[in-house]
Length: 174
Ligand code: NI
Image (tube, rainbow, N blue to C red; front, side, top):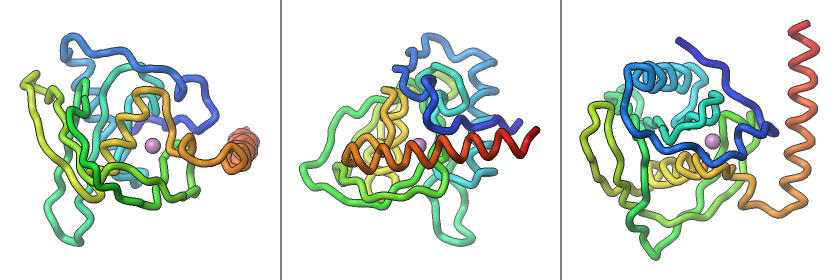
């Protein structure tokens, strides 16, 4: 099922998400729905708070090459356990902030530990786009958006645009 994605500003996007204790069937359905919603958008990552659920769950698939096999990942309670000193700057976007892109600098590589849909502990080191994406999604679990890395002025301009977008969309749906 495709779930609607919240648009910034929304208090649910600013909350610290709750840890997942047990991976219930409900949470497995949520992970599936989030992957469908992410591919549908289309996007390369999505965090549970973006669909209005306060749970530490993110999904991502950063395979970009045309014709390459998809690699959907669902991570419960993801944690960055190591980060490189080297940094990388990527032009980031976010499904909760449509059509806005800005450069963000983050560690070039990170090692992440998480629980998979079967409850097994997994650990992997990501670099390049995968590293940027997984850090961006984990930020969502802390109530942090990529625009929080920008200057206050830029953030205000973007937020104002989003308020207008939400107003226009609400009007269209009447
Ligand atoms: Ni995002």
